[in-house]
Amino acid sequence: MASQGAQTTAATTTHVDQRPKSLADFDPPQKPKRNKYAFAWAMLASMTSILLGYDVGVMSGAAIYIKKDLKISDVQVEVLVGILNLYLLLGSAAAGRTSDWIGRRYTIVLSGAIFFAGALLMGFATNYAFLMVGRFVAGIGVGYALMIAPVYTAEVSPASSRGFLTSFPEVFINAGILLGYVSNYAFSKLSLHLGWRMMLGIGAIPSVLLAVGVLAMPESPRWLVMQGRLGDARKVLNRTSDSKDEAALRLADIVALRMSGPLACMG
Image (cartoon, rainbow, N blue to C red):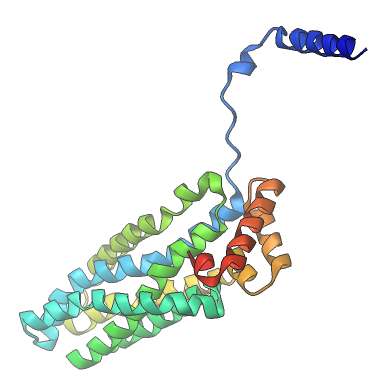
């Protein structure tokens, strides 16, 4: 009986294998459709990188008018422009701890608020020292944005489009540089006293819009797991994954990393 059953199974398998193949059998597997929620939230988070690009672009043109208006030396102009890199390091270093404390989403909001204050300080600066204070505050905000945008994007993106979505911050940095150049041109016709202040101060507007828009995004699922909010993390993963199975797998991976230690979870 067992041999007859084996022969029957083998015959059935052979019959299935000999089924004529259609052209559809040779088509490559279809890629999953791009998740619209992950796409929208990654784009919105990455738009905070505009702040860095705008600051770099606008200062390249505003420095010419600042030098004439404030009667500063070439060395002071070089310090004003180049000191941003130091402030970026400080902001980026603080952003990691801050994002673990208050969450990725509110860290993005915080970066927008800090840049908003810095842009206003630079716009209302009456002397070089005042301008440098505003530059410091804005630089800290830019450092926060530069660090947290790719972190949030990577944590909400499904595996099928993570590489594509994590490239958004670089795209928006260049978009911000372009906006800075446009601002230089738009306000170059104003008086010497007012023109460069408008170039720098107008940067406060996009930071407010971005900070408000980010409030519509969910929190990062990895941070939610770190806080023990597995139910909320599962909801976010269900919306940002290509399938329920992938969402469950991503959640299991995050929980496993969390259980293995805080350093692994942060990696």
